[in-house]
Length: 198
View (cartoon, one colour):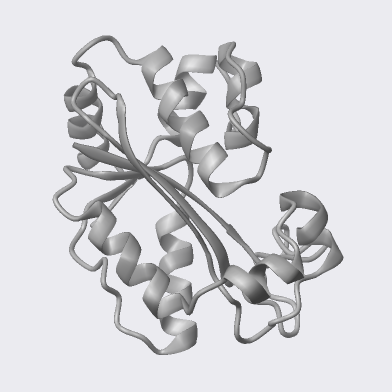
C-alpha cells in the first residue's frame, strides 16, 4: 500500500518565487488531500481535511482565487494543524511510501517548526514523483499536479489546486506512466535518489 498526497497552503502574489521569505509570509497548510492505493494503484481510501492557519488566519484573495478555499469554509470546517497532521499520519500508517509531486514533506516540516509541535509523521518515507513525471512527459521542468490530466490525457476529478483532486490526479498519472507492478521499482528508485526524505 502507498499513499499519494497533495496540500494547499497560504500564499500571496510572488510568495512562491520568494520561497515565502517576505515579511509575515509562512506557507501554512490549509488543506491536506490524500489517497491510499493498493498494489495495483487502485484507490482504497481517501482523506480531505481543511486546516485553520494560525499565524495568518485570514486567507489572501490570491489563495482563495487559486484554490477555491474560502475563508468561511476554513473558519467553519478547518481543524488545528496538530490534529490534521495526526489524522494524516494515521491515514498513512503502514504505507511503503508517502508520495507527492514535489517536496510537500518540506512544507510539513516548516509547519511543524512554525507551530512548535511534534511531527507525527517522523520516520515515514516521503518521496517526490516529480522527476518521474518529467521523464514520462519528456519535459525538463516540473509538471504541476493540476496540469497532469492535460499532460497525460485524462479528466481532472474536481477543481485544480484542490488537495484531494490533485492527489487523485497524481495517482491517475502514476497509473498511466507505470507498467503493471512497476510501483515497487519506482519506490526502490526513489528511495535511492535525492527525491526521498525519510
